[in-house]
Image (cartoon, rainbow over all chains, first blue to last red):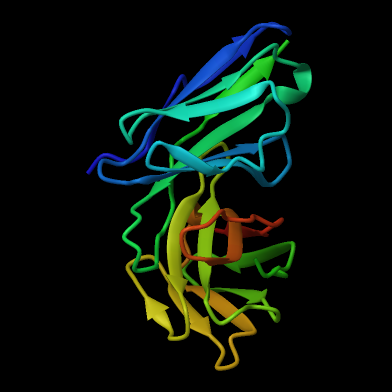
Length: 116
Length: 109
C-alpha cells in the first residue's frame, strides 16, 4: 500500500520568506510526527499529532514554527520568516494508534529545505 | 526514554551476517527496542522491534538479552544495499522516537 508521502521533495527559499511543508500519512494512521535532520546531525523531534490535536509540541524550536492537521489526515508544517539555520531535512512519520501498543512509526522521504 | 549506546561504525563482508550491538541498560519495563536504518538521503526505514522475546522478520532478527539491557540486530546475509546508518531506539509505544548517533554499517564487496 501507499506509504507516507511528503511534498515538496526539495524547497529552496530566501531568508525571511515563509514556507509550508506537507505530509500525507498512511491511510488510517491517527498519529503523525514531524522531525527534522540538520546536515550531519541526528533526527530531532518537533511535534506529535493524535488526530487533529497536538498533545506534544515541545520540540518546535521557536514560535516561527507551527503545524496543523486537518481531517485527521494531512498535516502542514509552516515556518515563518525562515532563517539559514532552518535548512534541514524535514521528516514526517505516521503510526496507527490502536491503544494496544507496538505503534511503529513509518517515515516519509522528507522535504529538503535550503534557506539562502 | 532510555538512552542507547552503539558502536560508531562497523564493517561487514558481503554475504556474511552483520551483527549490530546495542546497549540500553536503563530500559524500563514498558519500553520497546526499535531498530531503524537510514540510507543516505532517505527517510528512516523501520526494520524490527521487540519487547522481551527475540523477533524475526523478512529483513532481520532481533536478539534481546534476558535482562533486556542489551540487544543485537542480525542481518543474516548482508548485501551492498544494506550499507546505512542503523539506529537502536528504546521507547514507549506511541511516543516520540529519540535518535542517537547510530552505527554506520559498511558492507564491503
